Amino acid sequence: MYLLVEDDFSVVPETLLNAFEPAPEKVMTLRLSSDRPLAREDVDQVMQQLQEQGFYLQMPPSAMSLLEKERATNAAAS
Image (tube, rainbow, N blue to C red; front, side, top):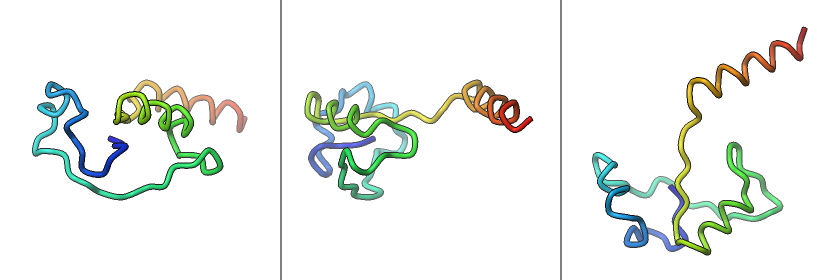
């Protein structure tokens, strides 16, 4: 989860916070910039959501999307 203000989980809906066991904690600090892409997310979309709602939730890719990506990679290599 990305937060606009460090450690300000007050902007995150309570139902979402309750899904974290144990409670979420800071792992790293990132300086976001359109010039520096993120590995799995569109950095401009992340920054927009941070400005609009104060947080951005990044979910892990589903098993199906990983399988489809692997198949596409294998097909391109053939």
